[in-house]
Length: 614
Image (cartoon, rainbow, N blue to C red; front, side, top):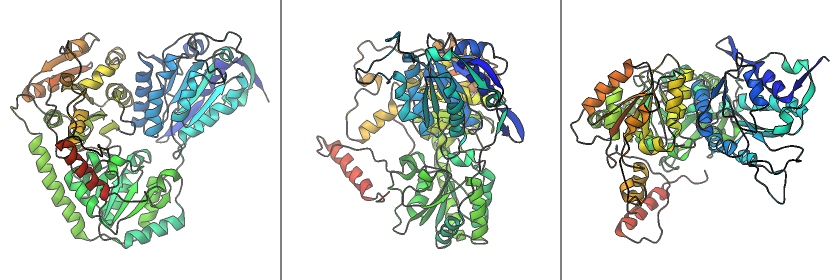
């Protein structure tokens, strides 16, 4: 076998460049780029190898390690897990800054490759700068913090170890069932060491995402359950995107006459004018869709882990005869919640299940009822989001103003907080793939960083990020990143004076306003923030508006801009769309106020409806 002598760092980069993937029949780089902030743990060796290979593996300068990784995660989601970004940092705080982003990727089943520097394998200089020491276990470093939030973890302590480790990491990140982040921790001294690597390790490798077929027995069992139902619903999750199963979902719904609810991660897998579209379900859903959930006798969950915000903490399904069929490529997800599992690719499973169902259809009255309820809910949302002269507009009025003036292909981005639910209700998809969020880890600050990655993946589409003042203050440096890389975003900053959605929860649970809104926190020197000026200081165009009509005109200017445009508007912290789903968030079992008593009563009512044994 022919050998080639390389440093470990150069071998890593050469291997990553050799990985390709087929996307719509076209060969593309599996790793389109690297986000990096260099320090003493990765600059001298890995950094030089990246510099020497910029043409084939471009490196983008980050401004915060968490942010740059979130951008890579947003890119991977927008590319439907078919391309993977790399994020590299030094040892110590640079590495631990990426741990939160790893949690985002892990929770949302998204791939990203972390390459943090690490301490010396030879341990001679110990303790090195930024090293944390465990007196009873010298093998532990700060990078061990990645282990709970990655699908694959390894530490390279010899240069030849990459021959085994990197292919395993790639296969994990590409596996539709096990997909998630990988972290390969690179000891500083090993990066520069040489080894005679086999040339075959660097041969071009072309990947394609597997499409596992479902088991015939599971399909038949699922079909039997569906045929015995009278009021079935489909629940479309993010896995429908990753399987490219939107057309299969549509055909299945029409052929078998089943209304389709969508999770927040699966939102825009079906357009609003589809004959069987029912909208959002669960804690972020509308009253119409949650009515279906409460009455349904069978839910067919497709590509969703059925998290608590989807199921109303399992209190949403009140029919005593309720049954669940779960189609998921992940055995772990498919077998949750007493489901009849169908373990397989979403598209393949829907096609094969439909064939077994034959000409069976759900009763027509059920979908008719769904459409009547949807019409009623849409009228309510349209009324709440209509133009207004209200002195301080609500979230939904702000979103409505943007939606009315947007193009059908524009992509709305949210994460964490109250904007997620309000945007999902208003931004009813006129085209597929036009709503992106991060709701698995509910990570504040993804709104801007993730939007940057989504824009990089969709350079010809307008990407609109809705962000609250709390998330903006947490992390905003990717406004600057978007400007200098010429990836234009439109950012709508809704300034409601703090963490308003958690203040809402605090009040709902019987508490008094405390430490969420700025006015109720220990802030004797409270001053307002001029978000427009702050954004302008990073090179963006920006303006502050004070009314819905001014917002609409500002948005039109933003659409014409060729660089990132930030619009700030004061918003009402107490006005929200009507809720319709239980969420299991505890309250005091010994009430200390009348508000606590009422909160405890509502909590017990919700708990009493929870499906047991889930």
